[in-house]
Length: 483
Image 1 (cartoon, helix red, strand yellow):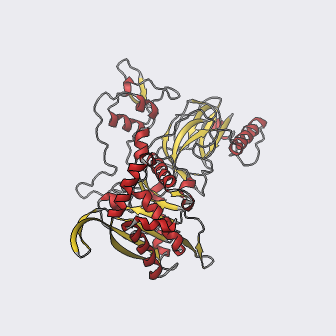
Image 2: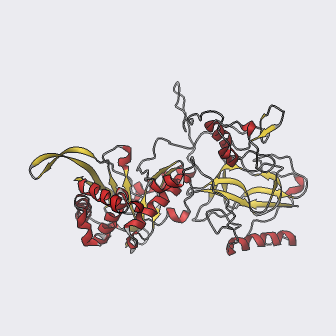
Image 3: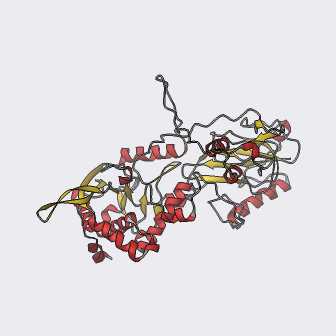
């Protein structure tokens, strides 16, 4: 008897997912709720647990393939394994007639299969722990999430500064991965003739970067497979070599084509829609940041544990400015021809992560303290860098604050984060000649720019908001009158 695990609904209207890494192979034994694959949606990277126990008969896709929600993902059986083909959608002639419906569909004629499907549905609803990691409750078993970058200690996490940008960055597409061998897991042998089983090309690449000898690793994965966790836990046998560039430079006029999928496709669609629908305008002003820097230093000295940096102070200033100019904390409902002014300030900010441009949201920023705001920004930045942002943390923004100064640039005219109506950007802070009370002085100067939807307000409102923010940057004490 065979059972088919169909790709489940990953939430937030997502319709497909890309296979990033298989953690099982045809012929492996799996337990209920065992992670069988890592998939990437337009919003997050997700560890995918299987609701069935048994032997893997077929994996319906290869690394890099896009699978639609509701499509067959893994076939699990308790009898004879099929030919082990990966990606051809077959599980042997005997299994083809015994596939069960996806959870949530009509009941199967087999009572045992119906009971299994019903148990799966109940577990997802009741929060038993047997749900997608990052999309439900946890059983407290300590299953660790997959990390997209090198590990960061807790001390580093506490002091991480947002890596923010309005551009896509240098990594313009999905990474080009080595090909999977035709025989699952056969990637070499040890000195004693034992096969080294590494299914995922990501694991092989990680081992190469860390200088880890795969032959010296004791595999912990099902069927003796070397997993990412095994490589991360193994000592490096040679200095780690630099990672290969994400996109190889064309040589001799060669053309390189990069699939527009996953996060990259989501970014492209959203920004294209913003440019199609929003008549945007940009205004900017240079400001003396001496007062802002002084306030940051005072807070660091008086409350070093608070972790309040420049970005958190700027976020507090922006929230105060939106209370005075609510026209900019808005969106346009095109279908109903209405401007929607939002009651809460859900502050978005851009993070350049290993997966591409992420825009986390701090919901209800107007109702929390500056200390809490700083903590929320740190938490979401770290989650974005590690690829563990939940979909709810990436949606619902009403205004974006962006710091492109970390890339050493002075200004920008960014594309508005649809469906929001405005974005405030901050350039680098650097010393420039500045006139102070009629005399020339050297001061730390930054440029603030506001890009806004001209449908929600006119230039006077936009200029008033920007001037208020600039005044608070130059004289932070002004902010007290708004709190």
